[in-house]
Image 1 (cartoon, helix red, strand yellow):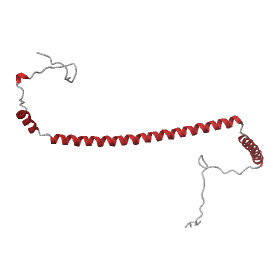
Image 2 (cartoon, helix red, strand yellow):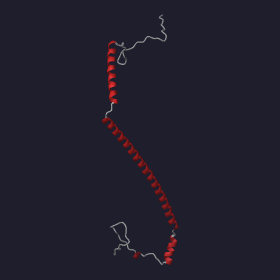
Image 3 (cartoon, rainbow, N blue to C red):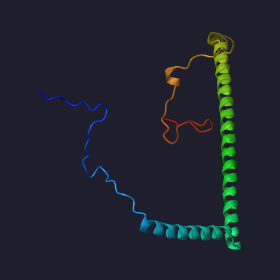
Image 4 (spheres, helix red, strand yellow):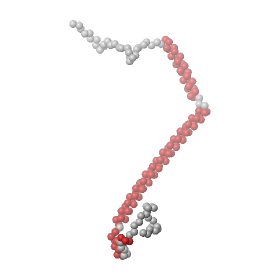
Length: 161
């Protein structure tokens, strides 16, 4: 019988080299190190030169930068003023709408009180008994069409038939 060998937690594994697995290469420092050092010195020199250029601000650059800052500040202040104006107008509109609603409610209340205070029977009695008024007969009523305007002016003449 063949005995199985127990290797414990360590097992022999094999790796497949392919497009998803990187190959380990020993670092070649002899030629690269000298080249990297030269590139670093060159890069440091360029960075230092760029920093010196950045620290040197000439007059046209300062004027342009100041102009840009003033324009930006002006735009910000104008925006805030416009926003404040819009907010004030909105509040004013809301106040006027509230006043309009209040006036409409008062008007409706007054109209209702006027309509309920009128006694049509009393008006009929006064008109017929005290003033001697009577209803018009059918032969006394003249009807006519007026197509020029939608309302009748009181001072216009009534057409004769």
